[in-house]
Length: 129
Image (cartoon, rainbow, N blue to C red):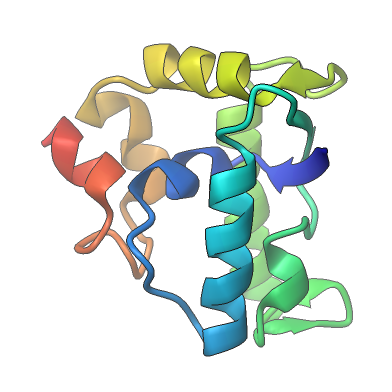
């Protein structure tokens, strides 16, 4: 299986607990979260709408909500992608292990996660506090 993920979603998936923007979004994210744990899953990286975004009710004309919000999200993506090789296809398990090593303290995610509306529910963020 192949999935396409935005940079910041590499962090979100690790803290996902079933919260989301809509029922369809939660079902889709749950499916992708399970898929990424498979040893046969391949991930390509992007700073554009991905397989998670495809079910988001806030995605309009290939941007998130509005131009300002979209710019903020792309900046979050680029902060994560700057620590990885966005041109490479990754084995999902190896990728998430690498992400866990690179984003392993609160300081490493503050510029990415601080303005996120899910930060209070995110297990990934909470474990870094």
